[in-house]
Image 1 (cartoon, rainbow, N blue to C red):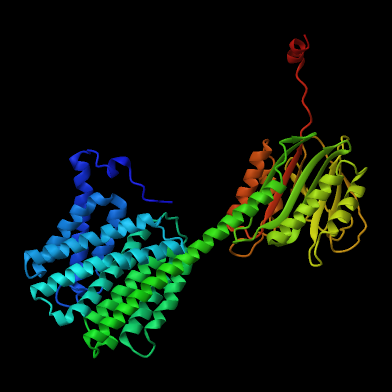
Image 2 (cartoon, rainbow, N blue to C red; image 1 turned 180 degrees about the horizontal axis):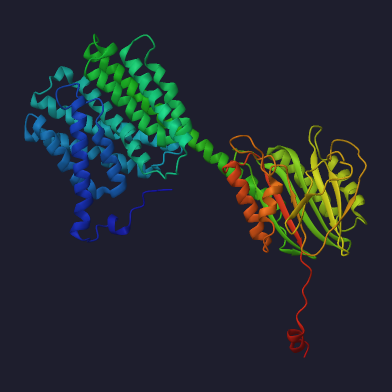
Length: 550
């Protein structure tokens, strides 16, 4: 997060090469001058008072980006902008002083308020409003006084001129500065759907602004739903350009007396326009800041839950007994959908025992239910004399912790030293047995009800498991993933092509890559996957064992 801490060389004026100093200053001056000439095309009072003075926003961005040393460039550019439209060079100089002091003071205030240009917090939006409205009183007071003293503006018009000047400068800071900051925001590639959504919302916004400016029937308020919608979907990156575009289009309508402003006097049009611009700026700033802040808080909470979940579901060791293991756990891409998928492995005197399960539902209750099942498994896995008793112990301990509408599909696995594979399936997807390029699901002889649904007899099925065989355990998120046409992921076919790789980590990576390619990266449900391979211990060859024995 940018806190605007300048290097010591900038704070204390250390000598730097002249070229390094002049290039950024010249760039700022040229941009300021060009933007100022465009803003003068929107003047309402004389040739120098405009309801949207964009150079103020440019100057504020330059002060926060380059530092206070940019003030000479701002002063020179402001002087040459005002020189041809002022009664005398002294008036242009006085106006230029105000135009320079205001952004410098605003920058100082923002630094003291711990301001962040990302505008991702409501406090940042409030800081910009406070600094922008307070500092621009200096430029408005100095500029209006110079015009009045020179006779260019009658004293009777001091108040109205000051108000237009002040609001114009303030709108420059509240609308133009966020626009430039949004251009510097970190950008991620957009999908075609995201791009189409942005274009559609932009056209909707332009249409509502033109309708509001051309007719008095709907009222100006109809532009705010699209503004809030853009802020909700694109945060400050979309809200800042949308707010500036809205203000410019409405200001053009007022300056050229178009639409509902055709027969409206200058004072009434000015008041309506300035109130509208201020409302647009405030709505865009605070809506986007509040939405960004909420998204950041949700993201942190989601990370905390994920870390807690990963602490409960520990990654297995690469080798447990005669088994080589690889595991993957992926959360759904939908926000705040932390699920209850679980797995655990233990090496006991009865053989290697595994558990994989899936809790119905999402969120913290699902994580709590998964934790209860894992605690019960870890408590009984070493003492249960056989797999059936282990299942009964886990079911009895876990069901007391589940709510009435919660249940867990579970698969208990036990692999003895003799190579016999024992399975107890409680409503869980059947695991896949891989032998070479032959893949078959190990369906239970009788499928029991999930844990928590009700009492059910425990059925233990037995299968052969030879050295080199592999067993794929997974939750239903892997088989329920669908492509754009709605076709489910072909797990058996993908397993034939990927799981024969010698390295089980590479094999599992290849399988998950095929899955992500099928669903185009959109994981709709949590996924837990365990790949186990019987890798018997390989004793050293006699040539190596002999020297070791000696």
